[in-house]
Image (cartoon, rainbow, N blue to C red):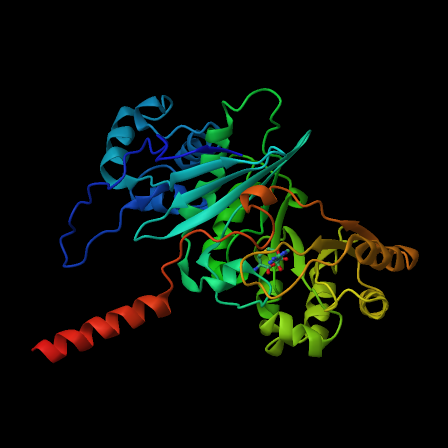
Length: 394
Ligand code: SAH
């Protein structure tokens, strides 16, 4: 493991834009360039009296070419460049720590302010390169086997912070050497539950698939959810990327324990939402993730129940060997149990793979992402005790 420590010189940017005070009493929000889809940016440009096609030019500079210096945007009129320098802001997360695993997996800890850090992981498998990004600081879902859950929840990431991870990873990997593949796939499988941050996640997805921005095929962008059922239908309407569902159990009694969100959206509702997601799409499949926990959900009876559950759903199954962390309270299923489980699914005609454990020597594997989370409840607790102490002194 190589550790490149200390702040990396990645924040190139004109942060903290100067905001003109309006005639009224409010403050005009700076034009957050990274955080706007092309369509939204065009609307903002029109409101500024600019031509909407200027948004396409700016999006190409920012996301396709990775240029954030307005002066370098040579096909924009000088006046517009000067205006952008005045009203627009581009903020990228800052790299606090970078690590490379023995297997080439890279993990970065990114500073998103106020003591909060998120983690982002790049998994090279030439010719593919998969970037795993976060959608929230921490997570509120409390899945019992997940390290992120232990940290609590702080806040949603903004669109700029979500898409900024892709911007940053591309720039960080640009000098990584010819043997490192480019980013061909993006998965929202890092920290957080993306469908609980729907309004910020969707514009980021739109930029990922926009041919003027990152131009990734929809099937190469995967959103993973623990099963926020109502948001699955909304995602299909707004930006139908590939869907992965963290199932982990074939029945409600067990899933209620492992994924507490199941108590709100039980398996039958989740399966109906999955079928509806693929209704007019006969080529795609939903990926069902299933973490293999020794003696908990890895028995042949569970595999058979899973086969029955997934009958009629266009599915692939990813078995994820449990990745341990301190005080997890679970053990990874032995390889023989995983093989036996997979055999039962395959014999029933289910496309099934066992996910290779990548980057576990740097805690970059599924469920090990922890970042730095100033959990709200913890902050609140501290603030309350500070208030109480102040009241006592008063
Ligand atoms: N909240 C979303 C996104 C997280 S994706 C979701 O639940 O899908 C991260 C994936 O890793 C999920 O499938 C999650 O259940 C799985 N995971 C969590 N902890 C794990 C662990 N310790 N070992 C293996 N997989 C884990």
